[in-house]
Amino acid sequence: MARGDPRPAAGGGRAVTDDRKAQLAENLARVEERISAACARAGRARDEVTLIVVTKTYPASDVRLLAELGVHQVAENRDQEAAPKAAECADLPLTWHFVGQLQTNKVRSVAGYAGIVQSVDRARLVTALSREAVRAGRELGCLIQVALDAEAGERGERGGVAPDGVEALAEAVAGAQGLRLDGVMTVAPLAGPYAGRELAAFERLMEMSSDLRAAHPAATMVSAGMSADLEEAVAAGATHVRVGTAVLGDRPRLR
Image 1 (cartoon, helix red, strand yellow):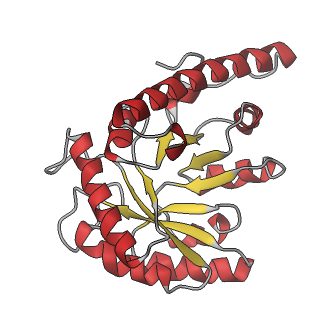
Image 2: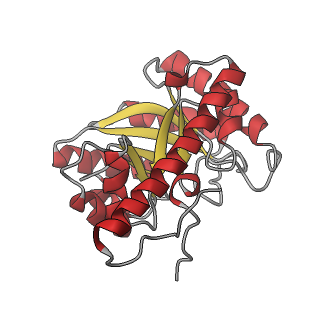
Image 3: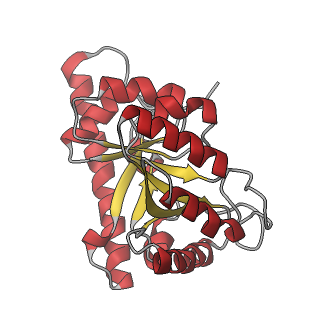
């Protein structure tokens, strides 16, 4: 379990900052050991897996410390928290991933700072992302979020398109101005046939990634696995893992 308080104490000066940086460094080292060991077991090279640190509920000061420790990929799931944090850290060499359910009225803001939106799950969102990416003069990477707990034609409880909708949505992204189809993402489902079967869920995602790459060879990114199940994701073949609490500590409760 990650060490350290959920947030660094207010004030306290350099000593508090140094303590927090030491905690983050220790936690990052442990996560690195886990990823490296999982790669070794799977017969994969360590550089095949990219760590994305999910910084939701943590302050911009932690993002700065992570950058000093060599982290370049960070993720957020709520625009109202992510937008000011990204602005405060605009001088850092970071790629921001948006990983939460995205409302269309937040797309203009997200398109201003996100490099990759991992939660694309409906055609209306593709249209909105394309419009705002073009307006901002940016190219947004997009992952199709797959809901392995969703019935055909439906969306998952935590967002995501059902497996039968992935192909059409991918075509929509690939044909949209300002957007780049990068691959697929999933969250291990809590219900349905894959509940409690993380490895099987991630292996199913890899099958879908293979099908997608047959039509879109550049869509190679597979984002799967979090603090509790990153080993299963690496074993299945994920290219990116999204880790929060194992790096930053237990999250404070949201009010």
